[in-house]
Every structure is written in structure tokens, then in C-alpha cells.
Length: 457
Ligand SMILES: C[S@@+](CC[C@H](N)C(=O)[O-])C[C@H]1O[C@@H](n2cnc3c(N)ncnc32)[C@H](O)[C@@H]1O
Image (cartoon, rainbow, N blue to C red):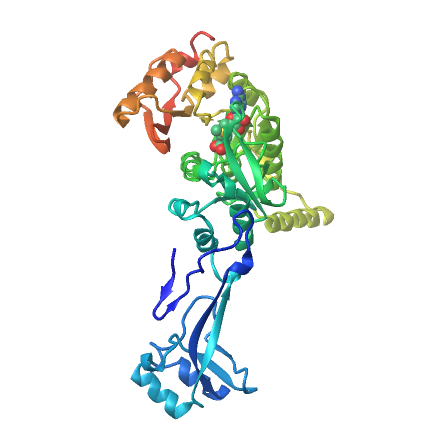
């Protein structure tokens, strides 16, 4: 991007230095301008009012008023033009009556002045400028990008620029176009900064910690996470079959939901448990490390045998909790009756209301695990499921010609795997386009009773 201001060209100079490393000294530019010599007490007159509006130097990161190098205590008010003939008459009038005259001044711009994009545009060979990487995504302190092959010879310089020009960035990585087939995390190479991949990332008002090189995380799913979290009611229990480090599970727990959260990747499981603790929801969010199929099959009886604490209203802050603890301690010390905490008075939660299955590549293939989920269950447990749970299953399209086809195709694949017809309580949500011919959807359906009470797979 070239930045031009009236009279002044503030774009970086044409780069003539080395292309194997960044020669920062090559980024130097001098802009000759005029300056008004004024007594300090008169500076305000030149900055306020309309007279000087069209004459003052106004470029980002450059001060308009500087000390006069030739006369101690005096100030220079910088103008945007190098020639007197360009100064508007109303400004000239003020200069004549209120200043000590005009002088020449050099504004010096250097490497620190320009943005990473501007430096890169000047640095790259001409044929690579259009389409040059201009953005990056952030996860915690890590900036990550996905460089096209033609930019790979310049990858370390691109990394250096991102690191030096963005205060929040401590590490810059390039995602290599290969993804771990089972656990879905990206392979990446360090371009600049510290080789520290354990991040603290914030989403949906929760704090997530994880090793970005070992677990799946995708900030682009933020809206989808929020969408489903809104669907869950605080009293409900959610079973998250492919939970990752908890972007559905932890915010749902914070909302009040009981959550059984599972991931087969031991690293995801480790951070899932840490995140539940760090967000103070480890009483209601329980982590598991099992294959998704096994987790689904065990989930109903697991919750029946070990119910999750009942919902007792919005979660208190740490300060409120501490206040309540002290109040109860005082009552006890005074020999008064200590009230039973509401969570101990009420029965626990024993029914799963939602299953979440975000493993779009293969989640549908796990659906047969629902067959016979409740068959053989004792009557009291069956009674809990007079209303069947909702299943929210993410998947990719196969039929790409139109969305109508896509929905029909997804429905067919789901019904085949479930071994039963979907009810009218079925909906489709387009999540995002992941590639030109690949869309991500979420199908939400109520588990058909004849599937759950039918024969086990
Ligand atoms: C696409 S990620 C979704 C993670 C998280 N729910 C989210 O929305 O960001 C899928 C997760 O499924 C886990 N996974 C893959 N195969 C699995 C399996 N057979 N059983 C359980 N988890 C599995 C991966 O480790 C990964 O964390």
C-alpha cells in the first residue's frame, strides 16, 4: 500500500538491499518541509483554529511540534509543504503576524515508521507484490500463517516483520499443509520468535490453555461454538464426544450446564481438564479420554451412576464465594445453624440433553454407536429419557452443486448410519466453507426412540 499525503510521499523507498536478509538501514527517507518558528506560548494559536488546518503536517507517528534546534526554548510547528508558495493565504497571514518566520526542516522516516505490509511490499521482488501475505491469525501469543510456495524463500523475513511490528506476537509459525489425520492438529514450522507453543487464548469469556502444536484449535469456529452454547439451557447436561480442549464444553459449563467432555488425544484431554479447573467449572465439566464410539455407549449409564451436581443458579464470582464461605464460618463459630448449600439439597443431573459431535470428516460414521443406547436400561433410567437427547453432528458436504442437495445427502448418510428415520425435529446449519468445493454443516436432530431403544449395534 502506498501512502501519499498532499505534497509528501510517505511510502517506503524502493528497496535496494539484500533479499536474503532484511537490511533495515535501507528503509530511510527524508522529507523536506517548511516549519514555523514560534515562542512556546504561541504554539496553541497555530494548532487550534481554522487558519492552519490545510497547512499543518499531519502524518501518523510524526510529531507536528518539535524543539527548534537553532534556538533553545523555541518551537517549530511543522508544515506539510516544502514551498512557501503552497501555503494557504490565511495560514501565511497568521505566520507573518504571530511567528518568528519560516525555516526549513527535514522529517526523517525510518524502518520503525512503516507497517509490516508496507515494508514487505517494498522488499519483495515486483512479481510477488500482488497477493503478498498481508494478514495472519492469532492464537494466544502465536501468529500463524499459511504461506504459498512462492513466498517460502522469504518466510523468515516475513516472520521477522510480523514479530517486530506487532506487540502481541511472541512467536510466528507457518502452518505446513499437512494435518494430523487422527487428532487434526497442524504441523508447523517456526519462522520467528520464541519456540513456545503453549498458548493462553480467550474465547466465549473463557480462558483456554493448550499446546498449539499438539491439539486441534480453530478460532474460525468461534461463531459455531457460541451458536450451540446458546442452544444449551443451564440446567441441561451436554455430552461433547470430540471436545478438543473444550471450546464447547468449558463455556457451556460456565453457563451452568453439566458436561461430559471427551477427546481421544491425550494432550487435548490434559488441557481439557486444566481448562475446566482454570475456569472454575471442574465440578460440572468432567473430562474423559476415550474413543468417541465407546464414550457415546458409556455416557448414559455413566451419568446415571455418577450424576453431575444440580444447577443452582448463576455461578458466583470468586469474591462472592469467599464472602459466603466466611459467612458460614462465622455462623458455625457462633454456634448457629449452618444452612445446607443448595447443591447438596438437590438431586444431581442424570439425563443427557445434547450430544455434540464436531469431527466433520468422520462424525457421521460414529452415529451407529447410538443404536440400542437405552435398550436394556432399568425402568427408572428409561423414564429419564421420555424426551430423547438432541444430537448436533458436524460434517462436510459431498454433494457440492447446491445446498439443497447437500442437505438431502447428509440426511441420507445420517439415517443409514443410525439405522432409523429422522423425525421432523431435524435442522441443518451451514457453518462455513472450508475449501472451494467443501462446506461444513451441522445437522441437529432428536435421537429417534426406535434407534435408542432398538437393537445394539
Ligand atoms: C475437529 S476437532 C474439534 C474440537 C473441538 N470440539 C472444537 O470445536 O474445536 C475434533 C477432535 O476430535 C478428536 N478425535 C479424533 N478422533 C477421535 C476419536 N475417535 N474419539 C474421540 N476423539 C477423537 C481430535 O483429537 C480433535 O480434538
